[in-house]
Length: 278
Ligand code: AMP
Ligand code: MN
Ligand code: MN
Ligand code: MN
Image (cartoon, rainbow, N blue to C red):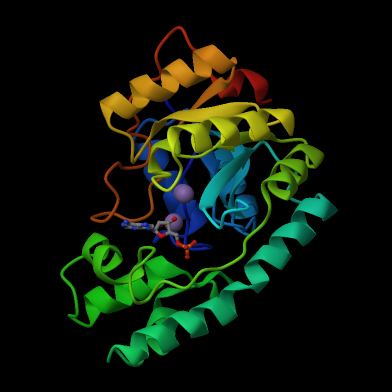
């Protein structure tokens, strides 16, 4: 089974329109694909239509931005959600609603260090204006020659602690897991190796809280995970009895480390999250 259960379209910060993304996944031999745009379900209908035409099993998904109580940002993926479920749709609309003001604050912060015009620049890259985010700022700064590539922009300007970073309150963990479950979906901790602000104890607490709220799965295979990360979170899945998920987190060609449909296979003894997906 070639499953890719985490990727982005141009409805958030991916580069391909939903149907083009599904065609690319199909070209990579994907049997099951979840579209998981940040805080946005607007791409799932078009992706589902294209997937049906190509015979790819499609899973409606979302990647929700979450603020923990210490202001750490994490991401919770929801798989198999009903995109029309009112609490989920309204919750996501609220989360998206903060992005415009945040973008203006980011642009003001960059202006202060002498880099002007970034709000207009980032807007040109955000095909869904409601979903303007750091990746769009990064692409603008690359296109305007300030930095050689997107990851260098994050390293110098957009990561926490850098001049263009502004802190922001996203959804709570309880809201994100609650919305996903309410909409009939399975909640997944996305790319856990990336939460460098959390100590081992902090990460343990996150998994405790997540499970207590009804979260069921963890990304063992993720675009950002090394082989060692995969081993580490395979152990977490076994010890905690969590389902295992896998996703490329593909955004754009030439930018993302793993292409859609090119995920490392899951360790065979783990229970894959797709056993829970219709
Ligand atoms: P935002 O939701 O606006 O805070 O943007 C988060 C997105 O920025 C992530 O989903 C990635 O697409 C991108 N991103 C975050 N950190 C990095 C990084 N170090 N290098 C490249 N892209 C990143
Ligand atoms: Mn992203
Ligand atoms: Mn993420
Ligand atoms: Mn993602």
